[in-house]
Length: 344
Image (tube, rainbow, N blue to C red; front, side, top):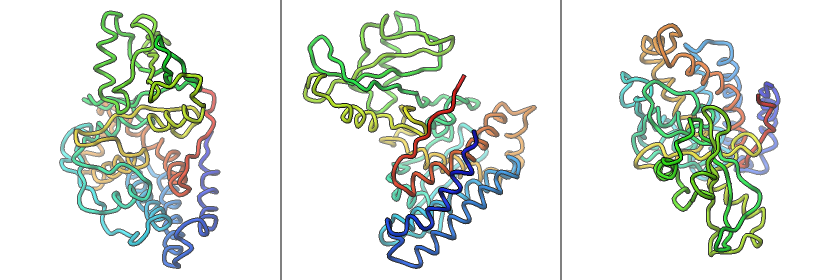
């Protein structure tokens, strides 16, 4: 189901509905910039729909920058406008997964990240690590990519006690890989979970035999528990407290009950930028390569020669639906979660 028309209406409606709720009410300059920037975002998104992948990254990225300007106009006190990207691609000649991006001063990326409460970019990161951390793209591998990927997490709405009576938050983590041999499972768990913030005090729920189960060929689930602070018993833990715990650990993303553990994207990163700002970094890189290295970009998109062609083109299609959704959330400063259509 294509939800783009409804989101377009919602974004148009925000041009008046947000005025009294944000900093827009205080300044005609903010209001005029907000309105013009959202108009440009909408038109860039429409342009991106009708061009091919050869040009689409340019429309998507510059549309997102204009959406960023609307967000900062609405929510950033003091100076809210910017005049540079705030980013730099270090080496566009590398394979796509190995291209690196670093912060460059204080520009659009930094302004939008602050306005939306996202983690900033602390140092140079690889394109492959950004791609792998994004729930929309993590299952589509890039050539040569070795970074840990976002993992889906299914949280329980109740706490449960272990043998000592202390309450634990409960969840299952889904991994799209073959089930490890039983003798290797505890080692796999310790090694793999070391890449994910919030997993340091998690433990397998049960032994290595009962905590792991195969969902289907190439996909398994791991039952995990986290001790409730201060050893409180399970019966004293409310559903609201449980939901707040999982909202910090693995926020719902785009759809109800769909949560993801996201790995950091670099050694200097305490945590990963938000999905919106991760998309920003990816599209900035795509736009730079497509504009300044058009021959390389054409080679990346060559379906007959490039192993990345299909997944890159698919990513650009996904962005058409994802960006309006994430921009709307950023403008409203609260999640907007859809019901997931039936998946086979």
